[in-house]
Length: 187
Image (cartoon, rainbow, N blue to C red):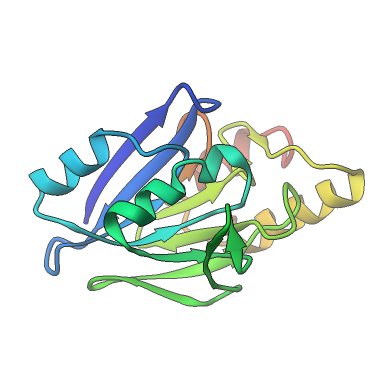
């Protein structure tokens, strides 16, 4: 699997990721905080085609670059809602299959931070958007939403193998084992 991380300091220090299939040269962008010039450079240097974008939730710091990505690459957009930043998206729900070339993944619903929040599980890694962070969880509008978020993280992420990498919407990456043992929301 080909993997890249792009930190976007000027857009709330958001993380964006590219995951690609080395066999079929197909790539997916996870979140689109900005259209960063490093994206086409990375795609070209690895001979990749950006075929899809996965949006974890519709906050500005995850979608501000989506229109430019669509204009330049024409990828399919996957999201938890049908419209993201005025762009039509293919709605994906819990356990929906996602393919990046020969790489098979699945969607997990992670509501709480936003009602439409989703994550992407791929072999050995999970993209959690703003649901689960290293040492924290995403902010919620109410204690009820917080309880929902924590429950979904426990059921849908903490059932993954302990060595599964967690790639978050902001901040450093982590692992399931570290978050289960040290994240204060779960200890």
